[in-house]
Amino acid sequence: MRLVLVTRPLHDAKPWVDAFRARGLQAEALPLIGIGPCNDPAARQALLRARQLALKPGHYRAVMFVSGNAVQYFFAQDQTPAFDAEALLAPDTRAWTPGPGTERALLEAGLASLQIDGPSPDAAQFESEALWQNVHGQVRAGDRVLIVRGTSPSTAPVVGNAGMQIPSTQGAGRDWLASRLREAGAEVELLAVYERQLPVWTAQQLDLARQAASDGSLWLFSSSEAVANLQQLLPQQKWHSGLALTTHERIASKALSAGFGRVLHSRPSLDDVVASIESAL
Image 1: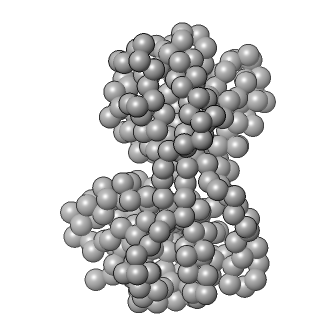
Image 2 (image 1 turned 135 degrees about the horizontal axis):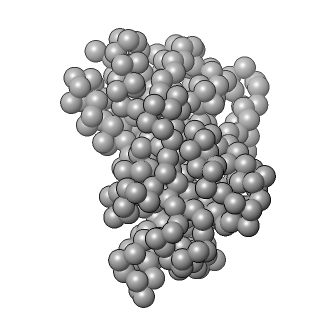
C-alpha cells in the first residue's frame, strides 16, 4: 500500500494521519514546517494591544485568521488580557476564516459559530478569494480589519532542479485579501502572532524522505512553503520519480517547479483528499 506523508506542522498533521488510518490508508507525519510563538518583545506588545482592541465594540469590523495556528497564538492563555478572561472578540466584530480547519479552531477556542464567516462549504478552494465572496458586503469605507498571520525568517530564493528560481507564494491569499479591503476603503492591520520555521529532522526522518522520493509514496502538500522547506532540507535530491498531492494550484505549481514528476490536485476537504489518494493507488 502506498504511504501517505502528511507534511503539515506536527500538531496539525496528527489529526490528518489519524483520519487517514481510520479510512484504511497507511500514513505518517513528516512535518515540513515548524511552528512557534513570536517571542520578539515588540511583537508580544502588539499582540496584547490587538487583543484589547478586539474586545472593544466598534473598533474592528472583522478579525481574519489565516490558519488554526493564528487562532491558537492570538488567543494563547498566557497572553490574554487579564481584565476579561472570557470574551474573545467584541460582539459586533466578525471572525473571518479561509476554511473549515480555521473555523474549527475558533469554535474550539470558544467563539460562537454565528460570529464566524468563511467560504461556502461547496467552494472549489478554501482560501481568501472564496472568503471574500461571502464577506465583501460587510465592509464599508473607514472600517478596520485585522489580519492575524504568521511570519517566516528571511531565506534565500529557492532554485528548482531545472535551475529556475521558484517565486514565493507565501501569504499570496492574505495579500490579495488586504488589497481588496483597501480598495473597498477599509484600513488593514497585519499582526504576526507565530513564526513558521524550518523543522529539525531526525536521521530517521531524513532517510524516510529520501526513500519516499522514489518508492511511490505520496507527499501531501497543503502549503507552498512546505515544498520550499523540503528543497532546503534535501537540496541535492531529485524528485522526478516523486508523487505529490496538493490542495491548491499555487502549491501544485511549486511542486512542479521543485521537480516532482507527478503532481495531483484536490479540494482541501478530507473526503476529497481521501478520494484523490485512493484514485492514485
